[in-house]
Length: 111
Image (cartoon, rainbow, N blue to C red):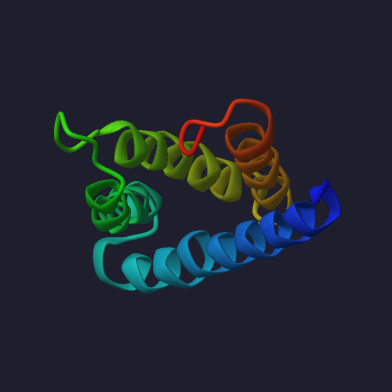
């Protein structure tokens, strides 16, 4: 019923996260650790940033590592895409499609 609003929100979030993590954070790290590995470091930090969210979504069985692991996999993929293509556009699209799939098609939480 709210597909259009969810699509806009996903687009804004994907754009924002890619500009921040694959753009700004990766560049800041490249100045410190070199451009060859900065995207890997950025992916690790991106996954680490999702630990508090995973903690708040934990069930009775404890912390579910699925969210940080998915963030690490996505961060590595989208970081490699940014490095390979030399721009953020393809990663933004891939990130938005992944978020759409996780939220709308195959919801992992809330159902």
